Image (cartoon, rainbow, N blue to C red; front, side, top):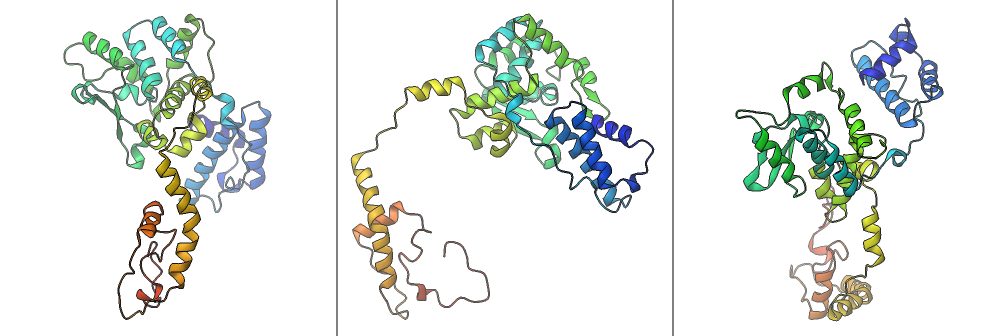
Length: 344
């Protein structure tokens, strides 16, 4: 955000913030687009300006947020995605200069940690060896009430943590060197310092070409792998994002998944289950209609007798499918002023 705000100030020059118009905001977007920036970068900087003017509006410096209605350029996050295979990851690790770099790459690719903020925040007390788990500090989500998350200690990651532990000096609190953290912590938050530049050297040393967003795509590759075998909601919790964000920015079909699909057959269900399910589909409307048509006196307050066939249908249907399966409408009495409760 620091760069985005600086570019906005440079564009507006000495113009007072209170006199910035919608035309100025639109011209700023067109200026960014004409400068050759990617649509995603243009959109991000417009969002930074939008946030800046939102804060200015709350403090009374401007009457309206002129950037609120500026249309963002169309974006396609998939354009900058790159899946890093396990084979290429091993080549990267073998080309790393020391154990700290081997661990940093493994944390990002095998466990999906954000670099530098999460990886460099790790302390040795966060590694729960006996529980096969890792407590990941998360500066990015701390303001949202999620200062950390707990992830499995994945078997591909564990050897590199063990190597770093064996090489650590007695009394070390943090896993990574202090100078790395000092260079990465700027006045406005975490910065990449020279981690990206050095990592690109490692990529070339491994015989590969640097890809867009080198660290982000390591993390995205890890989430794509795990999403093939675990529920997406679970994987998203491990990675500190949401399923919708994961699908938009992280998870892509992998070649491995494609190869598995080529040889995939749906699992056969027991014949009895298929038969019952078919009966349910044909009988559901009939049973519900008959049930609604029957009139049991409201004064009895009794549940109707459920036949074995109806019981089978009930077991396979959600309550919302036949809300009056067991009770007649008039047993609940007339609706009052309060809103109806879902499921009743």
